[in-house]
Amino acid sequence: MLVSLFRFLSIFPLSVLHAAGAALGWLVYWASPSYRRRLRDNLTQAGFSQHLNAAVAEAGKSMFELPFIWCADPARVSRHATLENWALVQTELDAGRGIVFMTPHLGCFEIVAQEIALRTELMVMYRPPKKDALKPLIEGARARKNLLLAPANMSGVRMLAKFLKKGQPVGVLPDQVPQEGEGVWATFFGRNAYSMTLPAKLALLGNATVIITYAERLPGGRGYVVRFVPFDGTLDGDSAAQAQAINHAMERLIARNPSQYYWSYNRYKVPHGVAAPVAGEHA
Image 1 (cartoon, rainbow, N blue to C red):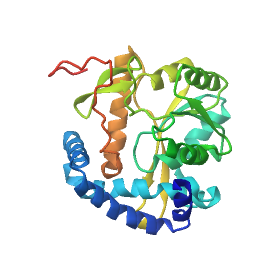
Image 2: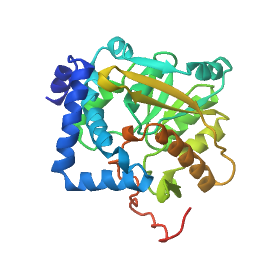
Image 3: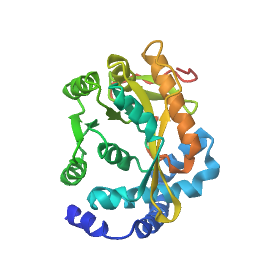
Image 4: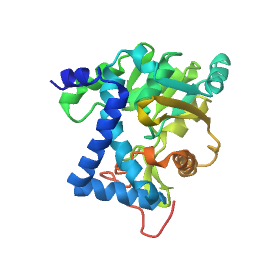
């Protein structure tokens, strides 16, 4: 039934879905005290509290645009996307170098992999949703030509590494909270956050170029600008230093468009089995 609903919603113009999504964002904000508190607290922690109203609306848009992104005809979806600085990517592809695309939860991150896969093969790590009802919807949406899925386990890591070593690109979400043993503590907007070590390991293992990418959501349902940004940090040092460099790069990217970040995500949680950082200490 959920798949049918999403397919029905996908026929509507993106402008209609975004308008409805903005209203939904405010409904959820006022209906859920825990959601409201986390979104507001994370915005304040990062120093972007002045963007609260816009962030609430953008969060709703990010949910209501999914039927369009996942279920509309790919050619129709792509007509709503403009690419900025694709030449940066093409240069690496032409040279036969592997690429690690780091895509944070900023803007419409779901469209990024689709747009890349229209131009080259791309392998991304995939973790099945906890709710079984969502599984056929999400897997069907991501089963696109040139878009290859690797499971979120050691087998999947080996698949990504092998793909990179052949000079082909992979995609990861660098701001997800990893599981025990898969991360280190590093600051994110001034607060300790358990941070992934996989993106840096993949880049170093495959001698790959790191490119940060996100899709800015344009106002009025006019579509998206998919931006490709050089990674301006360094992956020298140990895992903690590498994770910190990636977090700082994410901070600079988010500062470009803070209202479109996924502030309701529990970024500062302590995963099961992980020792919490000592209060007052910074990574």
